[in-house]
Length: 295
Image (cartoon, rainbow, N blue to C red; front, side):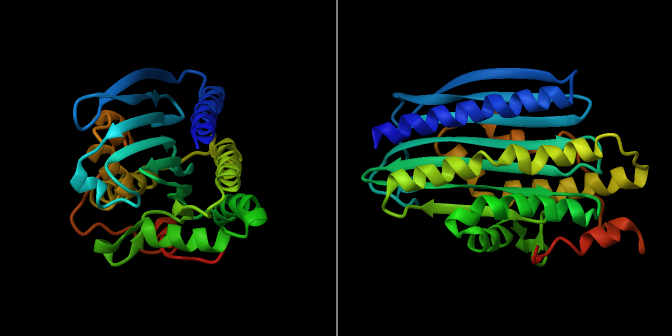
């Protein structure tokens, strides 16, 4: 087990560097703040930490690309709600959120993690897209990359459905926050070597799933109406992250860095009472995609 824990931690840090380099290539004036942090466990003993990278630039309004490796005791009440045994936890992973300025470029979220609690381990993660303009070809491209990535493991449809069901604002009548992607949790086939290889392989597809869409749309013009729709949809994003997101709760319950956890929130968003996009607009059309689709 220790061998795979070390390998996974090394992999997510390498992926963090690759994503950072790609963002810097696309946004040459981007500002990066790196914060290396540590934490104490539930009993105030050393409990690991992480590397938070916060970005602000001309292309990417705000973004976070974070890795962490934590260990030690956790609150026994919270431990009982997890999938493992006892109150000793080890967890490592990468979590990222990218909010672009241009509403023609989608927001993206991804995370991949490995967790050990007592005598049990599991993997989780995925990637999902939140677009603001109805470019269906982009949606098909994103899902196409994940279909191909999942093909060797015959897991796309299952992970796609789980993603559709999870990233949904049920308090908004079942409205998805985006157009989905893949998501999985508590994954353990009983063969850690195969599980590790699969999650490493899937996570390595993130760069190709998203950044070609940025390159494609980066120079497109947009209107104030486009921006207004983006800001309102970001408001829906905030609602999901603060009400439904299990990763937010996990981070807070395990004494993670609060700012690193809440870096998933957009720098700007908007709420208007009973907001609705203009009838007949591209934004009204976009609303049709915030529900499960077959890609």
